[in-house]
Length: 139
Image (tube, rainbow, N blue to C red; front, side):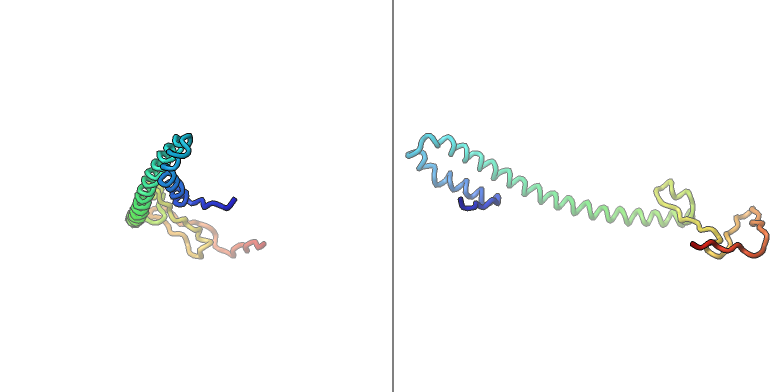
């Protein structure tokens, strides 16, 4: 058997051609096939209608998806601006940022940065004895 084309459009054309061109023949020559031809006509019409509806809905989906992407980008920009405002208000390393869904910047210990850690007002500076530092372990 020759391979039949399986695309929806080609199949629909075959169904509709059979009904349109064959209905008069079947009514006169093969009356026992008439109920099947009538059913095929009904099914093909419903399939065509559903395909049309599906295409309309796919167009709506593309439009909706585009709108969701646009609004998501806008929401990300707004969140970034709000985050910048909060960081300006509380500081980049404030634990208060977590309450709003933002990560505080990790403070690196003074030994890693090579600069002394800032001393908060009212606190005594670290009272470590000055002397040679212990060598770092290497692996």
